[in-house]
Structures are given as C-alpha cells and as structure tokens.
Image (spheres, rainbow, N blue to C red):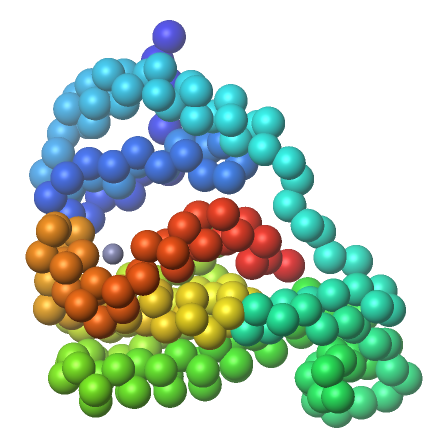
Length: 223
Ligand SMILES: [Zn+2]
C-alpha cells in the first residue's frame, strides 16, 4: 500500500529527505528537478522506516500543555519561573522578581502573549550571541530571523540569513550558544561533513553534550 505524503517541499537542495513530524505526518523535502515518480519510489523504498517512525510518533507522550494558572512554571534560558496572574499590568507579560506576571485580561490570548514575549527575548539574546561569535571567530552573516519552527532549532540560508526558533530561548544559554555557533559555522561550511564538525569542535570541544541535551530535552521547549 502506498504511503501518503502529507507535505512535499521541493527546493534547491541536492538530496531527498523524509521527515516524520511530531503528529506522525510525513514531510518530504526533495530537489526541484526530482520527478514525482522518483519521489514516490524513494518513499516506497523506505516504507518500513516511515511506518515505524509514524507508530513511534503516535505512542510518544503528549507534550506539556500549558494552562496559564498561578504557579505554573515557564522556562526562560533553562530556568523555570512560576506564573503569577495580576489584575492589571503593562506590558501584558513581564518577568521580574523571578516570576512571570501576566495580566488577567490577557488570559484568553495567553499563549500568543507568551510567544510574543519569547520572540522578543530570542531576538535580543540571539542577536547578541551572533554578534559576539561573529566578532570573535570572524564569521559573516546577512541577518537574523526568528522563526516558530518546532523541531528545527536553527538554519542558515545560502544568502547568509540565520534563522532561529523562538523556542531556543527556553533552553540554557550554553545550548543557545551551541545552536548559534552551529549555524554560524554553516556560513562557511554548508554541509555536515567531518570538516564541519571539526570546526564546531575546535570552538566548542564538548559540543556533543549539547547536541545530546537538545535531543533529550528539545520536546520540553514548548508551550
Ligand atoms: Zn546544521
């Protein structure tokens, strides 16, 4: 039986990739010139792998779903701060005295308010770290973009735009730094070759620990 492709994204890439999303859907990333027949062939060849991964996705425990109640913890740079609901406040959300303060009137759109807050912090924190590493290791880049990607922590486009998901600022600073460096090394080396990892290792000798941390904890960097 053919495996249905839920999302097909064709771009200037050279290789084809299969991605099983958290909800079990299948995304296929393929080169622009690859024909439908070849894409289908590739997908069918990996039938068993896809079905296994999809079964795993269905079994994985539900992610923490936030309720926005008093005392509920929210992550920022690796630390959990409890939420306090207050009668009035401007801006709608703030972090002070080791607590998140959210105005009651904003409860109906609490998750949007949090996301906006995380995006603002991500822009500030990540821009600062990118500038720091660019200066220290002589990397050049065009600009920084903050995305809402769920599993892709960062990316580097061919024109030198560095993208990072706002979820990254939920992680400890050393993890932010690893992802920033990873993408900055991509400004010089586009692939994940030996040379790429060597360069990452030259700058961050214990980078593997941080890769492992992201693999294990990435799913908690979520609202
Ligand atoms: Zn990479």
